[in-house]
Amino acid sequence: MRISTGQLYDRSIQSVLENQGDLSDIQQQLSSGKRILRPSDDPVGAAQVVRLTEEIDLIEQYKKNSNLLTNSLEQEETVLRSINDAVNRARVLMVQSGNGIVGEQDRDAISIEIGQIRDQVFDLMNARNPAGEYIFAGFESAAPAFSFNPSASGNKYSFEGDAGVNKIQISDTVRVQVNNSGKEVFEDVLTRSKATISGSVGVTSASLDIAQQASFDKFHRENFDAVTAANNQFRVTIISATQAQISNVGTGAIIDTKEFTSGTPFSFNGLSFDIEGSVGNTVDFALADPVKQNIAETLNNFVNALSSPSISDGAFQDALTDALEATDNSLASIASGISQLGGRGNITDAVLASNLDLEIANKTARSNIEEVDYAEAVSELSRQEAALQAAQATFSRVTGTSLFDFIR
Image (cartoon, rainbow, N blue to C red; front, side):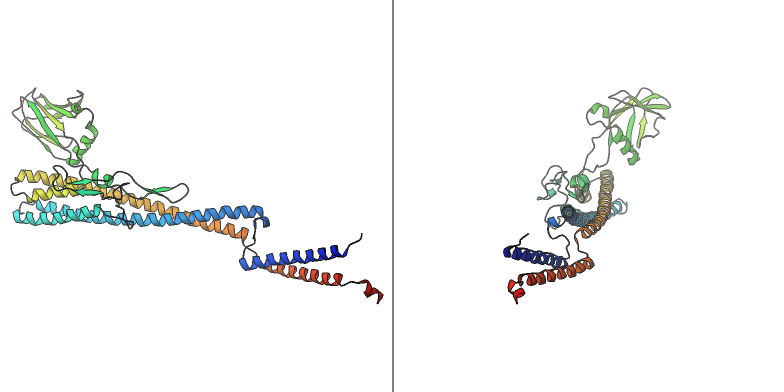
């Protein structure tokens, strides 16, 4: 086979260039630390690297979300604990105000301090996060969660937000609630459940008191009918000299039968009845509608009771009982909110730890695929240098051959 001079040069130059390219690739691998310089070097490995890089970038975003969530939870917990401490102080003052030795001046002093606590609590209920959003306003976070209207005929402290809650994605499958709505923590808090005598037939006298509030609250929750008002009416019927029967007026159902002595109090689900009458006499009592009230309104109502110079002892004791019950319910709601924040924090920490483990595993897998083995690469560099030198020497020898060299 004849090889022309042009072919000889082309093949020699091609061989040198190929060796130079291989040598350049090895040098680039050593300088970059990457084994895969282009997808064609390892198509399967390159695809795996792209997928692992996406996973690592996503985990990095989840880590940022987890940090943001943790900061938000810690801030809200700080606010709720501050409110809890302030309300506990107000409760101590409420109990103190109920002492018989506390005079009018003492009540005025207590009302001033509880008024300051009320203002502090109201301010905390409108706390904002670093972005300027109101923490407890729900989705309406651009406006204050609670407003104060001193001229309002009803509640002066009103909730202006909504029940919306924001959530943050911290893993592929886990989204955690960021905030508690003020409606849940502060607004939807029940005041003292009440019952009143609504009528009687034949009795000489009848009175009703709530002797055990917790027991009556349970009865109220289980039996109050928000749809049919008649089902909230109950009747005590004296069926003998020693027995009284309690029934539901609306349904006609007999609920209980109690031992009865005329003029002697008896108890029923936290209620204490003192009825003086005879067989066939009846006393009707009704469950009052449940009322919800935020803690700022509760404190404000009690400040007004403390500041009223004309309030009777009985009315003040009733106001104090209302305030203590509503305050206890508010404290329970705040404690529940703090507990929820702790649970979300635990979930966030657990998911973050899992994400960190996944990040390490993915980075290790990506490193095994794309990073260069320096010992192998250095050996390959030496081999490619030798191959290039051989190609260059061969080119020089072959292209230097001439017929005149043989003639001489």
